[in-house]
Amino acid sequence: MRSLLLALATSYSMLLVGRLVVGFGVGIASMIIPVYVSEVAPKSFRGQLATLNTLVITFGQVMAYVVNIIYSETESGWRYMFGIGAVPAIIQLIVMPFMPESPRFMIAKNEIAHAKSTLQKIYGPTVSDRFIDNEIETIQQDMLQAKQGTYRNFLERQNLKPLLIACVLQAAQQLSGFNTAMYYAATILQMAGFRDHQNSTLVALVVAVTNMVFTMIAVVIIDKTGRRRILIITMVCMIISLFILGGSFAIQQEGFIPKQDLCQSYTTHCARCILDDRCGWSIDTSSCVSLVGHNATDILGLKLAEATTCPTKSTDGLVTTVLLLSLTCYVASYALGLGYVPWVIQSEIFSLSLRGKANGIATAVNWTCNLIVASTFLSMTNVLTAAGTFWFYGSISVFLWILIVKWVPETSGKSLEDISRT
Image 1: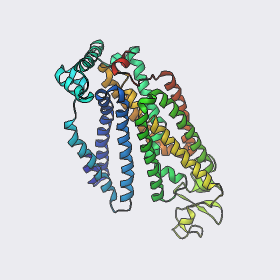
Image 2: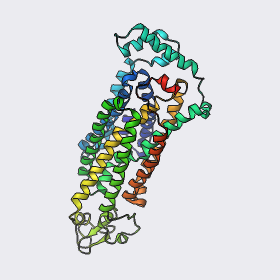
Image 3: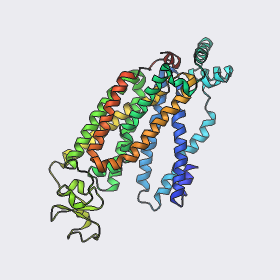
Image 4: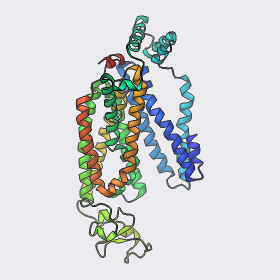
């Protein structure tokens, strides 16, 4: 439905409605899927299955870039881009009726026989009936001990702390600024000097592939390394990469120069001048000039193409290399930790009676922070510059890293019932 609305849109209003529909669906899915996976997965590789969800998402991001590149030069290509989005949705619609219900939900509905059957399918035919009975008894004890969950229960200390942990993790995932690297990857790379849109999109594809590859690595190591340990280590790497990325932009753009009201105010700062689509660089006068009111072949006697590039400097190659490497390390570190660990831990630290409500609150925090970061990024780069913006994300990440070190427990190798009692 969403893809049809977007692909067949005849007005801006229809596009907005389509985006609202997809936002509603994605929001619900992002809350339900981690909970479902955690409840049907054996504890020995629960983390791997939860991370597999993130891996599939990163694969979808890669495919989205590929589709965008294919149709970027096609007339009305954006309709094909949106329309192809219906394919995975149709596949999911066909497969979902064959998926089992959560054993915990079945027990809550007193459907013990169905719960046993599902657990037998999950653990395989080699496990004994006694093992299955013990699993059911453990789940029932957790449900009996847990009060009937209400939002007021979150005011109790044993419930408030897990909620704060989940919200901090989700806030850290978004306020690290990672999704700006995905949403605005081509724009960021144009800031880095890739002026051609096609080239910047191709490099952005490399960023998306890096995210997917390191998420694949995360699937392998999560249950062996531990959620807390891998999160703490990768966040340190991510923070260092953010500050190096900001420093690279500061050198490349010749300082911290915000957007100016007049092109002439950029004076001799060429790299910052040509980021402003109102301005161009005059090689003849070595100054920033306005493109407004001039045609493509007459900007102080220069061609437009020449006015939108800077003279080559000996350090350009080194700065661009450091910038791309730091961006790649930033993405890789995020994929190994913050990209999936918050969803895994969030699905593990609450009692059954509060798990759904708590996941709803934490997911709302995630998407609220996502909205804030995505809607303010371009404005922040105009005011703080690209360097200042990434340093700002790095500073926030340092603060949240301290909270994570103090609060977040290790949940690897423990059953959901054991975790809820700690």
